[in-house]
Length: 563
Image (cartoon, rainbow, N blue to C red; front, top):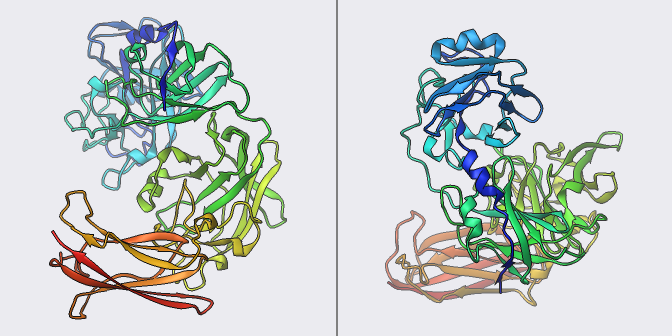
């Protein structure tokens, strides 16, 4: 049970931050200006004064973390005015669109993902945008098209508040954004994860800017076991990190569960439901981290992913890990860091890494997005055979897998998009019999949670059953589907389930040669093969099983469908 933490002293430096931040906002970016549509083929950043009063921005800085441009002296922004910032050499090209300021050392904008930060003379972050090339779409692609903020009154938030410009010119520098009247989708403010800044400072990371006033409310943060905080303040370029200073330092192997139900976003949105995150001191000597699942043959529009499992009793910082492959000379190659910042994997947890978490969530069931870590790049993992290595940053090998496509279930015709799962984390990594294709019922992949072929799921005998035996598909949320459930004592069974009416007529082929895990289910919604709702009646469910070893079984069950 989570308990309200004791808060004896609260130092709200965040209130001062809130009063100054977001007065001037980055409201438009041109990361990829070529091929140009109608605008100059040059990058630009647009600033808008959203404070309602004149502001002196002399000496302020724009940075991408690699290059920093300092604004000259005597630069003022009138209330609601817009300023185009670009390189000195391209200033004349943008002057016809509105007030323009050319600067030396203009921070180059990456075509894919980047963070642009605006700071004042004292170094305080006024506004920042962590944009992504994925904000573009097929209908509105990059290349001569800018990214625009949608609702300037919500400039503190970037969740669902940016999109590709719909202007026929490709952008609106110096003018009102083309998306200004677009509605924005709702967003559930979320506590993502936590880490230790020191043994006495815990950082809670949210997916959007935090409302400074909410951190002073009683019960805003709850912990289990109860701990005492001396102070809290907001940090981070995106104002999305809450630093909580502990009255008593953490000790090794001490874990705390934290929820932040009382913390709201800068738009006063509460967190979306109760979410608990763990925090504890990471161990500097990681061990028993095993490669647990890999997708090396994704569809053409997809991306590889690799999952690993913490079989130890230690907290490990992903910042201390990297993945790699081997080259033709068997040397370790293609090393990629897993996390640029602190991010932990706790005992018994799974973490999956990929370059495209959005695609992963569309393709597979992702139970917890916080278990998916986005990486800039992964090593090359060929479709036929290759090597996967999990290493520490000092190049100590924690686990290594030399996989082959023929480890997949041999009757699987199309292996594209099918992940290879480890059956037993405690068994030998390199044993081919310890790996099998992810099950059909799991969507052929289980990124971030227990594998469908995990041996601990095995039952004592083969069994097929229906639940419930009376179901009512009337969308009332109660017994709307019938689950054809299974549990086996070994992997590798192929299942076909057909449904017949009382006269013996086939009405639905629910599963045809589906690869099973050790346990799972296939839901029937009461519809036929043409997706038409069948009438209330008694139906016969016939399930046939066979394995490569030649074992066959047949099950017959009756199910009643009512309304």
